[in-house]
Image: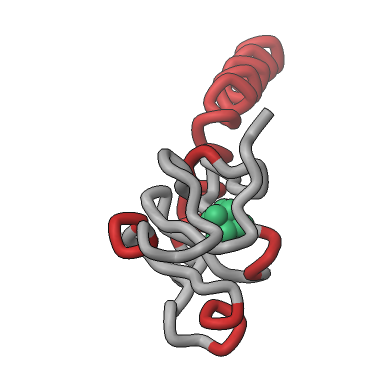
Length: 103
Ligand code: SF4
């Protein structure tokens, strides 16, 4: 009887460990999804000429053809975060004048 209970306990424990990474993935995805998008009208966004649509940045003096948040060294593709705008996500197709080519 005790052996059966131990087996069940061990099986459930192993199953729990096996599904833990999937549970963590769901939790982290929800945590990242909670990060608000950067408001292009926020003072810090305006200071760096941030736009959520790179097509509108072509006339900016600092714009380089082909540049966007998605290929910027500061962009975190997993979270959408940009450390220049802490606590906010930026659009992958966005741009700002602090763009630095991803190596
Ligand atoms: S620093 Fe890079 S990732 Fe951040 S907003 Fe500017 S272009 Fe986008």
